[in-house]
Amino acid sequence: MLFAKLLFCLIFSFNFLPYTVHLNYQSSLLHPLQEMLLVLIGPSTILLLFTLFVIICFICQAALGMFPDIGSKFVLMFGIQSFFNPIFLMIVDAAQQVRILFVGRWIYATFIVFHGFR
Image 1: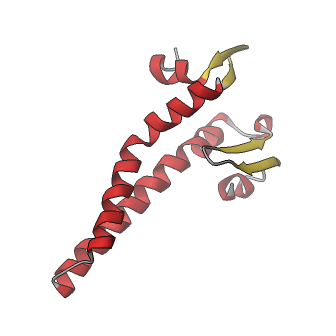
Image 2: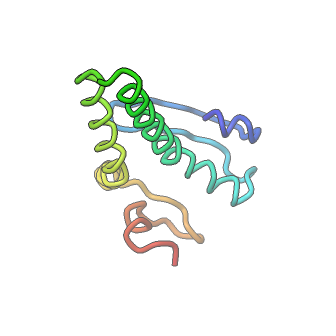
């Protein structure tokens, strides 16, 4: 959402649900490269946070000789969630039957993930 505001994109709604987040914005104002960056910033942020957590664990173990068990379990679970995040997104999109307007026709989001942009 912050990246969309930096691009001066008009955001209509931003809703949190227990299983997903809905962000409605006017995509016609964005260049295709900007829209791809808007989509890719989510997984990139998760990867960056996981890397930061691993570095913090390494520094604590090097400096203090130990890292709390609860912290280790948190980093482990965050890493597992980061790895399975695309699969979880496909499951939620398939259950909601999310459709996208792609090259003038409506297709399911999971179809794009499985078959790519052809």
